[in-house]
Image (cartoon, helix red, strand yellow):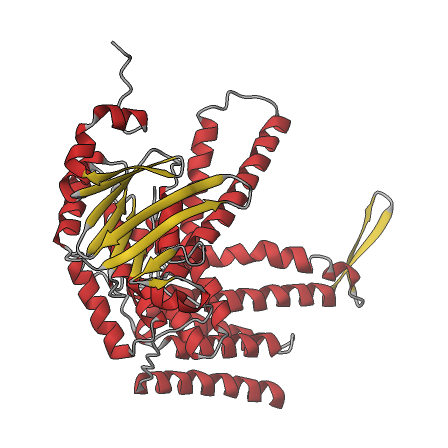
Length: 258
Length: 240
């Protein structure tokens, strides 16, 4: 089976790659917080955020096209959530349409809010892609753990990372088995097959879960998760966090000032 | 000889009412390598799960003379190392290091000890330098070796392995057999790979429909064509 990588470019060796995962986690969260809390009208600030992320992406030597492609995945979700805002927000009317029985109006302020949500989501996802593309997933988990995220949640994430490809492989095998016997048939029948496959997959995953738990117990697992702590906070981390933090704080202050 | 595992008259049925084991008795002595053979669904895996208390049966299984019960489960699991058939179940951590360290950490080793024992265990299975790798990206043969290392790292008294060579190509299979041969530890190997049994195990136990039907020298058991055929371990020749 084809082996996929969630953290494809994480083996690189740039300044960003070498940072401690905790530094990256905290600065990323801080960045997202600042982006989200920026008032709508400050388009200059958003331009600045974009320049900031773009610079970091270039420093990290992760292919920009790859980042761009992955970032587009967020658009449908945002659109789904925010699509109605331009129609319901009150204000100066940008356009009015008659669709069958309804009178639909779009307002300028509504459009502005919509675009703003899109921009914020996109900037946030860019920074998150940068984080996951430059950090190995196992290091990311270590970082979360050292930042005192509850161990159970870290374990769930680590199981997800370990088994998602096992599941994907299983789905691919099931699809191949289905296709090699599928001699046409109506849409409805195909849909039923898909339903059966999902059910089978669920049962298999459930049973695998039981076997994994047995394997954990066989090695002395008693419900308490233990790990080796290995802090490696360096000067570089402090410098990076400080610089980025200062830039962001300056932007926030500038926003409040003007 | 010292008894490592003793099972007295063990019967077990799954919650759905399906009987899996009935009246199984056997003794594993220190230094032995025993093959547990039998057809599919004979109860081999179920029996192995009793050896370190994953499945319970108070007082019927004794490890190093002590009856296995709720209170000494942790001790038992340190003494009886169980390697599961599917390494994708056995290896559940993001990296090989984390997986091998899992057992020793649960046993309460400190950091230096854990690092030492992980390096040692990888060396024993010939996989030194694989610490940072992700189990998902290993070949099946490599996964099987790592799975054995995860258990060896706990320094058990007996290694219990379920189907070590299933799905392996002949090359990987024989190198795994050589590896197991080189490990100086008491071993119980469940398998229906008779080549492996012949190469590795002086003693064999046949399990069929949850019962022990033969227990003796491998050379004698494998020579008894009729016995093997009766229990799904050889081709059923038509009479005459």
